[in-house]
Image 1 (cartoon, rainbow, N blue to C red):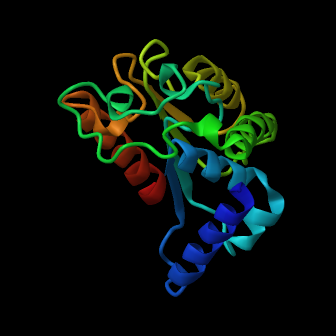
Image 2 (cartoon, one colour):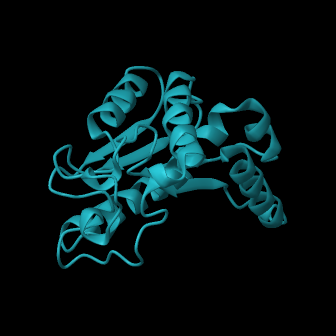
Amino acid sequence: GGDNLGRRVAQVEQVTREDRRRPLVLAGFSVGGELVVHTVVSPDLLAGLGRRPASAVLLSPAVAVRPFSGGDGISRIRALVHPGGSGGAEPTPAVPLANPLFAAQLLVRGLWDRQQGFPGDIPLFVATGGAAQDSYVDVDAVRSWTAMLGRTDRQVTTLACDEARHAVDNEAWPLGALVRAASTDFLLETLTG
């Protein structure tokens, strides 16, 4: 579950804690993005990091997932990126509903996490694919959540890639390159002031 993954985040932070001058940046794609959100909105997990994250980067965060991933309940590379993109390995689990505990936890945890207060002192970057293109994440719900966060005093930077599918940073040129450049620019700005 997410709490076990949160403990893993804390373990990684502890290993990198040797140089306290290095900023802690939390980043995640899809379920990893949900893990980042869950970690920063959960006081115990956030405290377990040992220091405040300097920023967070979320690519197609699974804070609002579609009940039938991939459009038909089966996850496939072609649903992640358009032809010409670098999709990598087949998504797992291929049929999230075959693991009902995982699927239910992801749906419930994403809803719960969106309702919590994302810390205002952690700058946030969120890139999403298109609502009609991403068959994994409810893009409209993610964008509504980030818009709500942006109406407060938080630093929220969003990038809407309406032509991209779920793996926004792996799309063919120019979309993937745009996402990678925008997230790098965000990190440079937030980490160097």
